[in-house]
Length: 485
Image 1 (cartoon, rainbow, N blue to C red):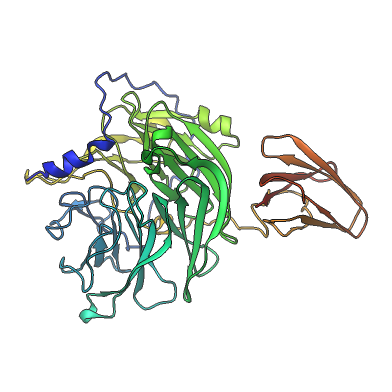
Image 2 (cartoon, rainbow, N blue to C red; image 1 turned 60 degrees about the vertical axis):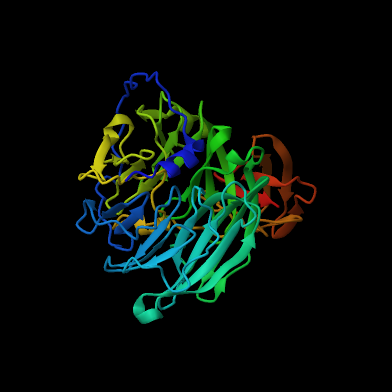
């Protein structure tokens, strides 16, 4: 039976429209260089349990409808699921209760502090180097006092069904409804990223075999403040972890940012505007495209080419993919396709070839039927969340992360600038006489630096907090991005 109470409670997200414009005619520009990389080796995301009875199995490469999970499990929004390396279900959670592989409430698995209506209420992350120790990160809804917390599951207990051993450890409050995770491609750790409420601060936590480190805090991008509805919206890493995308719902924007997996620093925010509320967001597997869901009846699903070099070029690449109403959470599957929540519908939409531009991505609005027997099963407002690295295509190699923060690749290497980021000043050491120019993020020349042979020059002590570019005036190309904190 359809849960109409849940439907009424969560109508806060709805913005139905009745006048639907025709889909834009789009020019198909180019095939992705990585179109052939469509297979995935990791099976930890095979099983999906979400919504009011929604359940899918990706074991065969094509999602098949399976029996629902625990009857009390009906997340209206954020949830998370984890399977083992062979694709066997381990447990799942809505951020409030944890259910084991037998679909029973896990030992000590009730009373987690995730929000009933949080966009990303829960995210499960395996502790690196551990034998079956998982962290569950939870976010409260409506900027609630519980903020960002974690609990720990030990799968070695309860005869292999698992037990919650640590519950509701506070990390920070108040926070938005956003939490994302990715495995560092070059180090044995995960990065857990969340966003504070009331400011521009990102918290990046490194999870290693030793536990969870103190956060690296970056102040960049748009402040999440004002009405609590601005805490809504998904945040995702790309599979390599060097890019982040997020939506800020009632500000009608989404943002693209850089992430440094060496340092945990977020930088270089690019802001893009919609005409109505934003909600879901997802990268294509090889990260050339970003998909955004909106409440705008004229374009409920849009695509951007984020491989383009400038903010203007990315904005201009916007392509309308769907105009059907009620489009919410987005989630990539281990088949490389992007699945689209249709808002309390028995159907899930699918972007079948996300790397292709415009309508060549082949979006099908009702491709997956969760309820062919009409038992009242539907998807609610979101799909299960996973660490982004699980969706790395086989054969894909992540770009190396250079020392410092997001150095711009050059033919002739730039001299080292350190510390980077810095709360005071920076130092630049050169072996030859050089001249460098420092530009603000908006392109204004801030300072010209002259260096003698084998000298070290300090600069930036009086700079305001923000992002700067240090570029040589001659003899080299490129430059280095530095951050004043």
